[in-house]
Amino acid sequence: MKNKIRSFIELARLNKPIGIYLLLWPSLLGYILAGINSELHFTNFLIVLIGSILVRSCGCVINDISDSKIDRHVNRTMNRPLALGSISIIEAWLFFTVLGILSIFLLFQTNQLTIKISLFFSILIILYPLTKRFFLAPQFILGITFGSGSIIAYSLESNIFSISIAILYSGIIAWIVSFDTYYALEDKNDDLKIGINSTAILWGGNAIKYSKMLHLFFYFCLLLIAVINNFSFVFYLVFAVLIYLFFYQNKFVKNKKYIKAFKINNAIGFVSFIGFFFEVVYLA
Image (spheres, rainbow, N blue to C red):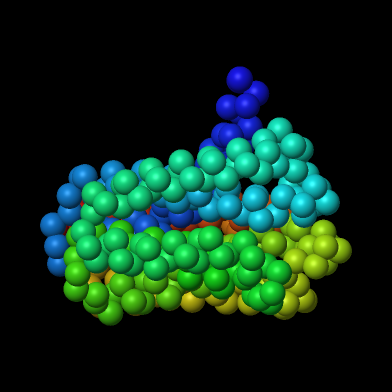
């Protein structure tokens, strides 16, 4: 029983929370941004937190179901539960159903606008794993899908979609594509063998350059939001920390330590959140 429970935890990647954080920070940025024009409620903060855990878990399970025959041929994924056979496909589908029911229950604690937006993007969560087979740049689908957490969280507190949330969403999409390209660079050789698409393959020798450009576009969007909303000088001090993290990340990229470069984005998301929180909540 303990081994089975451990396998389900590994299937949902709850033992590797980096993915939860990288979904949570964009969502919290959108949630905090709504506080510029609306009052923030702690209940909705909890919904964003729990929702990030459930949605990321759903995404991991459906991804592994889709890739169950592929993962065993990739060094980094060959020990995943479905690839090893410690969990059956039927058990995985049942687990996905349970997570889906919990997600729907949580969703119905929100408003109609949030429900409509969430249901639309939930379709992409299910379809994303398949895009790796027929779409040359699946990272963009991932960015659109997981970046939607910012819009969904924003809609919990506000139904007025400002230019700031539009800028934030576009920046977050670029950010996700950037760091997931680094992640894909780690699997590039295996993906080429089994015919899986990624921006790391599509962009070839330019993958790192384009990833850096997309990352800097994310920073530009944060800076633009700060200017539009008259953030204080403190945010620009926080922004200086983000610039440092960008160069720190590049050290790992130069040494081809792509997973470490990918993981640095957890700190980038956290620092960005702190900057927004201080300006919108603390100084309010």
